[in-house]
Length: 269
Image (cartoon, rainbow, N blue to C red; front, top):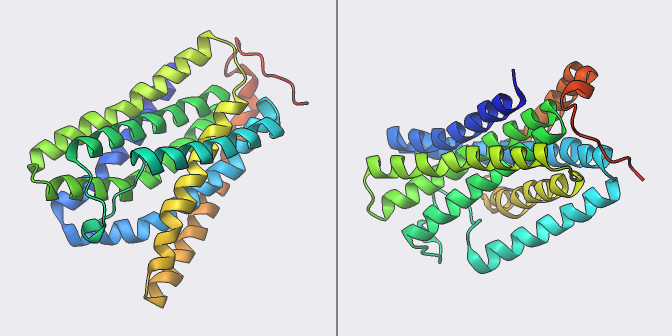
């Protein structure tokens, strides 16, 4: 299987998962809201595990740990500023009717498209390092897209858009993940550059989404039963990606040297 085909397949998988949550909402609202409530903590765990156990590790091995951590911090601060001043990275939730925010439909669509595009960049950047890193990044992206898209679908429906139009809009939006993945992977294949900063930025994005948007939802719950279950799901998500990452590295990495014969990794310093 060619490198580009791998990226295309997994980026498409990530995009498809971004639609599953919305499709669930269109079928049965109560089931979708339950999945969003309990899927979000699991997604937070996968994002944190992918960031700390895979992306930052890969950043250190491909460039330097110091550089990876520095850019992870920059990623967190950058996404904070984007969310604060542009509201493009705000994750809408099924129960957001009471929110003081009332974003316009166009802003929701633009924000969702940009978010999916950046998810694609994350997948493509990870594949630049190794197939296993790309697969782990895809799993993390897919996990957090389901609860996010439930909220986005619900918000667009509440703004008066028909179900068919919401589906078309989100299909186009989801395709931006594929564009982002192929774009950054193509650039990386044709231009030699240190991938550590890029991986650090992606890790920072994953960390920010988990700790600023998803984890606070757990603390806001009034039910002790829901909080305990959410905490378990967060830990389970982190453990799952950690185990998958370890398995993939042990199975795929022995042939890692042949993955990209044109690349010349920068030695850590």
